[in-house]
Structures are given as C-alpha cells and as structure tokens.
Picture (cartoon, rainbow, N blue to C red):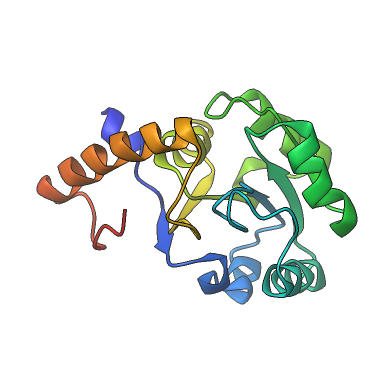
Length: 174
C-alpha cells in the first residue's frame, strides 16, 4: 500500500532529538540528511552553532554524513563546503539515484544508514523505497518555497488518512 511507503520509522521534533548513541548501538555508520527545513530553515545560508555541534557529535561517533538535497548546487555547496560535509544537490528525491550514490560514496550498506528529512513525499518515500531506516523531523521553519508548500498540503492529507486508519502512533505536527 502506498501509504506504508510514506510511513517513517521514527518521528522526532528535530535532529537534536535523534539519539546518536542509539544509532551507534544499532550499528548505524552513516546519515543521509536533507538540508532545507531539516538542518536549518530553507532561507538560512549557513549552519547554526547547534547544527555544527550536532554534526560534530556524529563525527565523534564515527557516523558519516552526506547531505542529499533537491536544491541547487550553489545553495547546497555553500552550506556544506565550509563544514566539509559531502553533498549531492539537485537530487530529484524521491528517485533512487542520489540515495544510492550517497551510500556508495560513504562505502556503507543501506542497513547501516538512516535517512533524515522533513518531507514525506521526498525524504521518507525515497528512503523507504530502498529500505533505509527513515526519520521524519518537524520542519524547522513554518515557511517554504512554492513546490514545498504544495507537497506540505499533500502531506497533510496523507497524515490525516494515516491517523484515521490507525497507522501512526504519534500525533501529526504537520
């Protein structure tokens, strides 16, 4: 069923609520994360000190990070390059290509990788289609670009149906 492909394995308020020690215990060696409204607001050009600290904690835990974003190379590169984080821009999520490219570049298996993002129809669907453990976060900003606003409307419909069918155990924050 299509709705099952939209179901994240976890739902948290923010990246800061992801237990890095638990990831290590689960033998997670890599994170594929979205950028806009997952790590920082879609219109914030640089990482916040809290995001820099979170990335440092992942590095200290020997967990690699690759940012996979549908945004353009200028946006993603200007955010990731100062942090020395690998990235894939213009990813065309939810298609498989960028997710598979990321695990190849990090030399990890899908089972050793989590996908983190703020959108059901790009991050969660893309990760679930390939069998990744997916973590949905609440968007860090209440505003979005044009296409994301459209996706958010569709997400609300999907979350409504998931709740009605008893598929979600958490309360929708979308």
